[in-house]
Every structure is written in C-alpha cells, then in structure tokens.
Image (cartoon, rainbow, N blue to C red; front, side, top):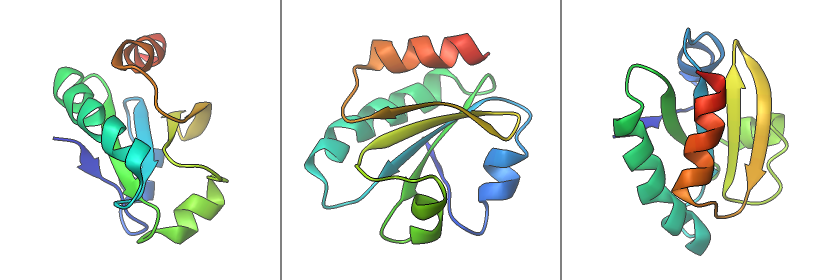
Length: 105
C-alpha cells in the first residue's frame, strides 16, 4: 500500500528519506487521479524497500501542493536526496512511472 504523505510527515518520510520517493499529488474528486491511484498502489508494493511511493491529498495538504507548484492533478513528483528530480503531470502508464523510478534507484 502506498504511503500517505501529509504536511506533518512530509519532511521525515520524503525529504529525509534515504531511498528515492515518488509523490502522487491527487484529490478524491479527480477522475484522472482515480485512474492513477491503483497504479501508485501497485508500484508501492513492487518497489517496497527500493523506493518509497506515496500520495498527497491536495485538498487536505494545500501547503504542499503550493510548495511543489502543483497546478494540475494528478502530478507525480520524483524526489531523491530531498531534491525534485522530475515532475510528471496527468495520467501516465505504469511502465513509464516504473522507468522513472528505476533511473533513481
């Protein structure tokens, strides 16, 4: 299961993570986010221990959405060593997300 990142745990779980992180910025009401959600959950299982995969609900964590300049959802942000490596907007196939994660681990 994917991590649930929030304002309260983001620094510890994402920025200070010793493994790469993929953060999915989403909202419950977003149709395309509902397509990406199960993909994120699958990747979280497949990359457990190698990369941290999780989600940020933009409605509940506006500060993070603003900080990471999320203008469209879903937006996936790849972070390594506390720094943004890449951003992807919109629905992306699982294979594309997996390739991006593979380049970070």
